[in-house]
Image 1: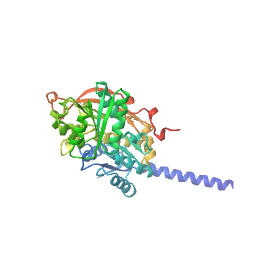
Image 2: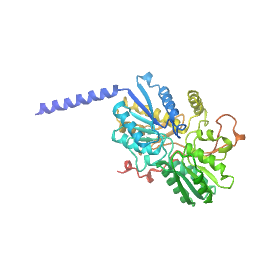
Image 3: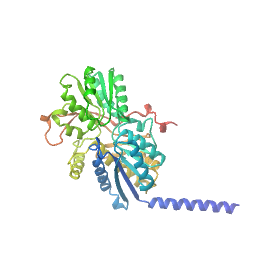
Length: 406
C-alpha cells in the first residue's frame, strides 16, 4: 500500500511538473479589439483603438523575447447581441485571450458575462458604466480609463459648486446614459443641488429639438448631457441654434472627448467643462505617443482617452504575462496578477488596479479654450483642476462589488 501511494504521488508530481513546463513555454497571445468601427462612437475608439493596440504590441518588446502576439478586431455595431456573439466566436473558435476596448456600456455589460462564463479576460477602456466594477463586477474584467462615477464627481461636482444648482438631464436611453444620470444626480443632491427634470433620447438620434425645448422650458441652470460621441456633438450644435447658452443656461458635457471638440470646433465648444484621465498634450511623453499615433491614422487625429486606455491597459497585461512566465490562458489568473502589479505607464502615470477590477489614476478637469487661446492644431484644453487617483473613483468602502465580500 505504501509503495502504491508513493507511485500515485510521484505520478501526480510529474503531471504537475509537465503542466507547469508547458505553461511556462506557452508564449502565444491573441488579442481582440471589440469596438464601434462604423457608428457614433467610431472616432472615440474604432480603428484608432486597433492602432493603439498594435502600438502596444510593438512597444512592449514582447516579440524580441520570444512571444507570438496576434491582433484581430471587429465591429459590434453598438448591439449587445452582436457583441456577445463575436465574443463567443472569438473565445471558442479563434482562441482570443483578451478582449480590448469594448465601447458601449450595454455591449460591455453583456460581454462581461461571457468572459466570466468562459474564464477569459476583458480590459475595458471604452464603456463608461461604473457598474462594471460595482454591482456587476467580475474576476475576469479590468476597467481602465474612466467611468460614470469619476465623471460625475469631477465635472458634475465642479459645476454645482460653481453655482449650477438646478439640473435637467438629456439622457441616452441605454445602460451608459442611465448610469451617468444616476451617478451625477447623486453628486448634485449631495452638494445641495436639485434635479428639476430629465428626458431620455434614443441612441444615435439626429433630431434633439423636442428634447432641447423641454430642457430650455425647465429653466434649469445646467443641462446635463448624459450621452456621448455623435449624440453629444449633435446636442451641442442644435442647442446653439436654439440660443440655449446665450439665453443663460449652461451645457454640461458630462462625457466629452477630444474628437468631439475637434468635430464641434472651438467657436462652438469654447467654455465647455469636461473631465478626462488622459490628454494628448499633457507632457512630453503623451505628445510623443500622440505624434506616432496621428501618423498612423488616416484622419491624422489625436488619441482619445479610450484609445490611450487600450494602449496602457494592454501594456500592463503584457507585464502580467511576463511575471507569470507564460500565458496560462486563464483570464482570472491573469487579472489577479495585473492587480498585484502597480500600474505605471507613460500615458496615465502611476496607479493600481483595485480588487474590484477598477484601475485608478488621476482625473483632470478641463475647460475648452477660446479660439484666441489655441496656439496650434488640437490645442484645445486648459487644465482647471486635478483629482488624485484615490479620490477620483468610487471608494471600495462604498462598493457593492461581490468580490469584496469576505
